[in-house]
Image 1 (cartoon, rainbow, N blue to C red):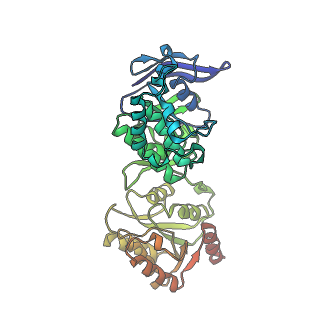
Image 2 (spheres, helix red, strand yellow):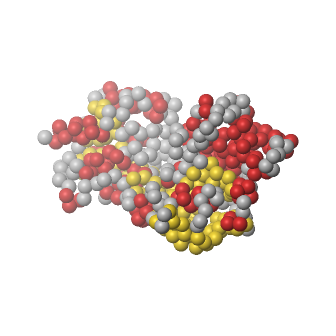
Image 3 (cartoon, rainbow, N blue to C red):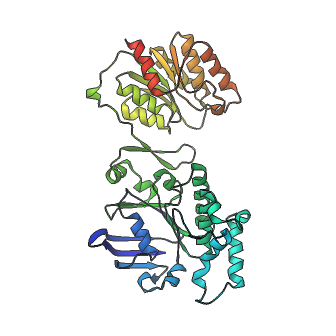
Length: 419
């Protein structure tokens, strides 16, 4: 679908893109990622024929981009920008209809085929209720759906996305990305997109391209390119990469700023953290950095909390994912609890799989251990056990657990007992 060879581009003599060579296959979804100033938007603007005067060659569906008129290029490539300000307060239908300009002569008016295509896309994007409203009166999410519809009306095989989700709430981001992915898988559109949110991009992409200082740092399948080493070298950030236990896709988490082991002031207080679902990671990193002796459990073998514990050398109890905690793992968890001075219960979500972790916290109280609870007393929004977890949680509170609103409060509370 797209072939780029020996691409160079400069602004006022300053190189912006350097010696770029890559291909994008038909029906694929490629995300372009990189820090600000790496050349992402410039590359998109060149492929969409907005910027000229580049060196090298670009072929789209076999056509040399340099030899195409704007109208011909617009039949091959459509762009979904971050936002659009049309200047005039057009209706939604008028905005979408503008996408048909590549198929109209200079003095031609809309043909029946153009009208039919506009109506088809309005139905496809499910914005029939917005068709006669003014574009400037819409919400951010609604506007982006209109811009997607405008791009689809162009009937191009290649769709470019220039940070289309950057101003949207998370619910609109996911809705928009799901819609774009359907265009890719069901309609056969080739998608190339720029994204700032790496996690959002890699959930939907087939391939990823990392740009750094105007050059391709790496390009290939998500599983090969999204590595901790690559992200550190491109963005200068330490992260850890793991698999989402529900989707099986990779996801990226920042590495907490940890005090090096040789600079830690080790304290003779042992804290066991009830873990799971990533909720314990900030707690463990904070306690570790302040010199406390930390253990955690029970975590499943795909859990973020397990990655955090491994990175810090924290002893842990793990178990197989997608199944209830085994009796063996629960007993090992209780062994850690017996050897601790206090137990911390972060704001976990509780289901039937990890319900035993909550029971272990209650058993810690029965052993005479101090239990500190992070989060609100009402856990109904985190209880997926039909109320069983809420019942045990309330017992833990009733029996004297200290409820704390934040990790900082937790640190202060433990520090009082340390004096």
